[in-house]
Amino acid sequence: LNGAVGSGNEALDLLLRRLGSASALSDDDRALLAGLVFECRRFPARAKIFEMGERPTQCFIVLEGVTSRYQLTRDGEYQIHAIQIRGELPDLLSLHLGEMDHSIRTLSECQLAFIEHAELLDICARSPAVNAALWRETLIDAAIYRASNLRIGRLSAVARVAHLLCEMKLRFDAVGAVRDGRYILDMTQQEIGDLLALSFVSVNRALRTLREEGLADMERRTVEILNWDGLVDRGMFDPIYLHMKP
Amino acid sequence: LNGAVGSGNEALDLLLRRLGSASALSDDDRALLAGLVFECRRFPARAKIFEMGERPTQCFIVLEGVTSRYQLTRDGEYQIHAIQIRGELPDLLSLHLGEMDHSIRTLSECQLAFIEHAELLDICARSPAVNAALWRETLIDAAIYRASNLRIGRLSAVARVAHLLCEMKLRFDAVGAVRDGRYILDMTQQEIGDLLALSFVSVNRALRTLREEGLADMERRTVEILNWDGLVDRGMFDPIYLHMKP
DNA sequence: CGAAACTTTGAAAAGGATCAAACTTTGTGG
DNA sequence: CCACAAAGTTTGATCCTTTTCAAAGTTTCG
Image (cartoon, rainbow over all chains, first blue to last red; front, side, top):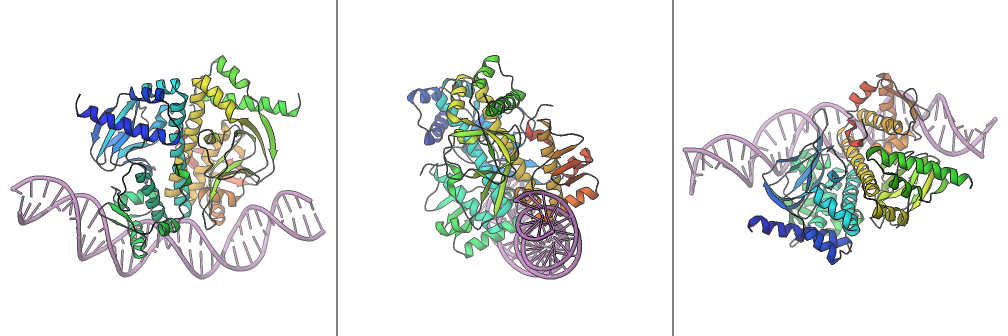
């Protein structure tokens, strides 16, 4: 009956698109999901969403902006495990894993739609297809962590950045957010370093290298892919782990 | 009716212990799981189990030995994402994620019990508790990847090895495989390096450091914890991500 | 017993981190 | 709308951890 409802519809659209992309949802499944209540909330940049040790009773879908899942070592080292963009469901793990073992916060300003765990679990119990689709989402999260392991563990600084730009290109593609080979990655070079386990100086130099090699450019939070095949090659990127449709 | 049946019972015991440790299973749930058919097979060291690109129709539980989930970069760099030991279910992801995006093979000689996906999915459809417990297993796998990200991305060589020895101590504890602070980690230093993104030379030097500091010792595939608190501190280890019972 | 696999140690090289300083962009209040 | 401060980017120089290369020692296994 107001702006929040409109956002709720948008959240539902994104959810249906995302869950339906891998497995076919029946009309019944769609009807069940349509019954969900979405509580839309806006967050400023760098705002806490869930903290390590908490026991969330809601999860959320990202409507706009970038959220991050991260952790600190005891001596203050900061590692971003993963980021989430429009249409992604960062927090399904809290459905079945009581205590948060890491924290989630926004990087950029965000619009998020929250869903009660209880409602989602209820739908899972009624619909094996939705259950499978949500489970699948958490498995893709895990696949992204594996890719991150390989990226951090085995790729050079330049290759790490190239790999990330490839991954984000495909993830933004999935929600139609790439135009003319460009997408907005609303992160600082420091934050990219926190994600790739690089210093911001190394990120900056890697971006310069990619620009000089004519593969990609990033300026004012906008990434431009100049040579997709070349970038894929430089980052040794294989999209299989994203489990997207061909 | 033969040796395989005995192993099947062992597999069932391990499965019930593992799934029951977090959430209470009802007698009905246990009965359902007891109906599973376990196909027990022995594998030599370094044997392929599932390859990237395959679409497994079975998953398995490890009865004995160490299996590894790994990936190769295009230029031949090898990264082990995770290892699995007795009582663990390494391959549940194939339940809902058609194509394997990485490979699985044994490190040591192994005894594995295979279960048909179809049977497991059938039980999931009938029992929300088993569904939740299996889903939870895959979420803990993901948590271990996150821990691995932090370990590889932010810890020094010595801390990485210390962190791993702490993690494996708790995982072996869960199946009662630690005696007098000792457990058998049947991996070479090269393989530990493949897991921690270190050269085998660095692994060797890190182990020497831990020995010199009186924290832990590893000799002939046997790890001995000499000073648990010290080792936890050295590896900045926080067990929260394993989501074990207190 | 012998060969292969694995571990241990030393020395040199490489890649990225850190430190430092200038430059640019963004955001805020007057 | 401007001025200024804060935040972020860019580049150079140096340092440090880990890698690589090399070679000797040890264990395992047929």
